[in-house]
Length: 319
Figure 1 (cartoon, rainbow, N blue to C red):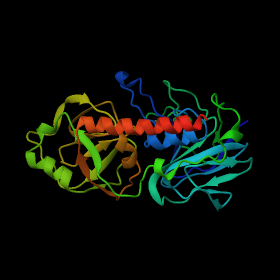
Figure 2 (figure 1 turned 90 degrees about the horizontal axis):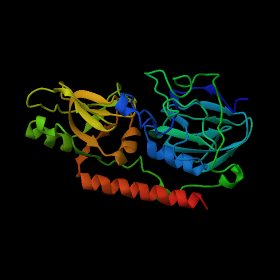
Figure 3 (figure 1 turned 180 degrees about the vertical axis):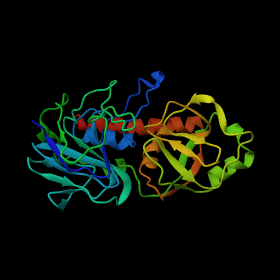
Figure 4 (figure 1 turned 90 degrees about the vertical axis):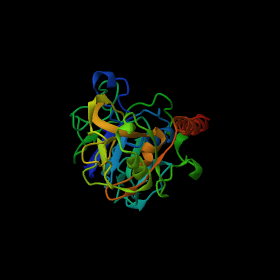
């Protein structure tokens, strides 16, 4: 018997975990949650492994009916969640009962919310992951976003079967990511940064860029002052990754995101640091962003800080 019924699918709701990290050498993109940090926190709150599959809902969230009791947590952007019509908090565990209906409104802050449930969303593993890759038509629920009438199963939680122990938990404000305060997107210098005229890097770090409507899970397309190449934008195909900042011939940057390819033939002026990808993923079309260049050592320091925080939360939840 199914555990969750989709009454309304929302704009783009998909099953995601942390992605297919072990298959890029074969040309398989990673996919997975756009905001991995929020997904990890949601899973930890409900007693799941950090890589458990959850729902990623974008801009306009779904309406979901629970067909059995459970414990959920909602993290990420604030899409005005309500349970049985009453507003509910985020970054905390919530007990749901059979027949309860979870609804979302429009995005208040951020762009994507994550709904984790104790036990995780149980869909088939494809190349070691339950993440949905819509363009490829695989992973998740039949390789697509949710539709009205879909039924979802909840898995069995190996870490903790007593759901009552996970009710009433909340994440301190100091541990929650801030998606409201404006700050620069930090990046390290890219492998083809020397293919641009000197003033282009100055422009890139000093001016704002607007996220275009054509942006999606594959990449964020930006509009701003044109960046000028010394001798063309095309290169012999090179490795790219989530966060790679490609600049094609029109001089407008594209930041590659979770569904990006594994190689690309455009110059890369920089790579957004992994710690800042979640912040960028919570930006929506029409938002403006700025970039700040940092060194590799600084990027590693910020990553260690993030993982230290995750470790503390993990240890606290294990009590």
